[in-house]
Image: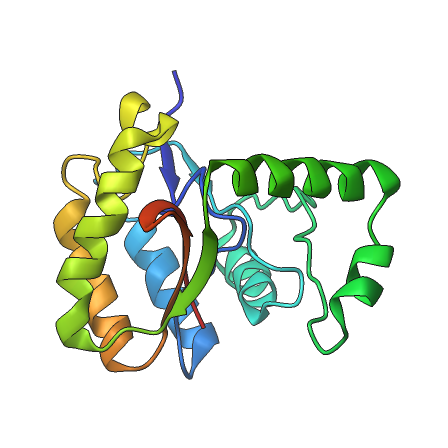
Length: 193
C-alpha cells in the first residue's frame, strides 16, 4: 500500500496551507527539499484543500519543475464563503430552498432542546489550555473521538495542538466559534486568521 504525507488536518479541515509570512517561494523550496530527503517514509505527498488563490500552488509548481517531480493539481472542493456584510434575510435568500428548510428544521429542533447560543472566541495565550480541554471533551463525545480522528484527542497530536494554539493565540490568530445548548458546549469550529 502507498504511504502518504499529508497536512496534519487531513481529512477534517476545509482549508489548509503552509503558514508563512514572507519569502513563501523560498520556504516552499526548503520544505520540498526536506520532504524529498533520501530517508523519506512516504510515497505520495498529498496536500489537499489549499485555496485556489494561495501563492503556495504556484510555488509548488515552480519547485516541482526545478526538482523534476510529478505534480498533479485538481479542484477538490470549493469552500462555502458567505459575505457577512449584508443582513441575514439577504444572505439566507441566496441559499437553496432545501437548505433554508433544513436550517429552519434544525433551528426549531435545537430550540426545543433549550437555549442556543453562539460565541466567538479569540483567546489570550493564558486561556488556551482551558479552551482546548473544553474542545477536546466535545471531540471525545463526537464521531471523531469515537473513531480516533480528532486532532485534540488523537495520540501524539495533543501536544502539537497545544503548542500551535498557544503560539497562534499569542499572535491573535486563533479564532474559535463555540455553540452552546443550555450552557453545555455541543460543537465548535477551530480556526485561525
